[in-house]
Image (spheres, rainbow, N blue to C red):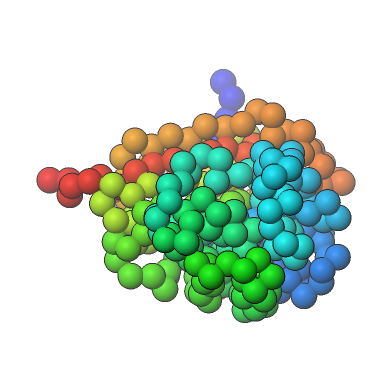
Length: 282
């Protein structure tokens, strides 16, 4: 009988702040180094979306089209994701979109094209350097319907019930309080709003050397949760129509994240979808 994987918090009890500082520091380094490292390697972490040809995983491997890549000005696509949330979000003109862990803004700018001038896109990131970089990219992309706010995804600087769609790309796994992240996503969504996330999920127990490694935490591995746990957290937050679908073909790029070991033996990318009920549950 195989051992059930768990997402035991790799940081000691009460050390969530230290975990956040670790992630914040790694992404500050990435934001201030245009040719820097990415989360998709063993030398850096992730706090945004992923993908330029010089760093991280190639965007096309993650499901972005050539048109997507060419539509966004240089500097927003850092190579830090594990999928393409826009592909599952079914965005409509006029909608308001919130990106959790928006990084330099790549997914935000793609979403802005989908929702149009009457729509709105908000990116939230806890790294000041990433927010600064993303705001610079607003002008480069002439994205007048996009704004970026500094904040933690566990404590969103967003009003209640004002968002139609919440997206995120390989960021929620980095949080030491995933249940709180989903509860906050539920809070800011309007009734009938939806969650469309790309993230990694745990498929096998992590060796202690990986689970306790700060680099593996920041590199989108050590903080991953099993599918059943994610489903339960979403249900606990109040979501319905929960769907978590692992993507077996993601092993091709995840296997390249670490030169020392094949991380695809432990995690795969997945699409995570859910909906806030149109009416309150009894």
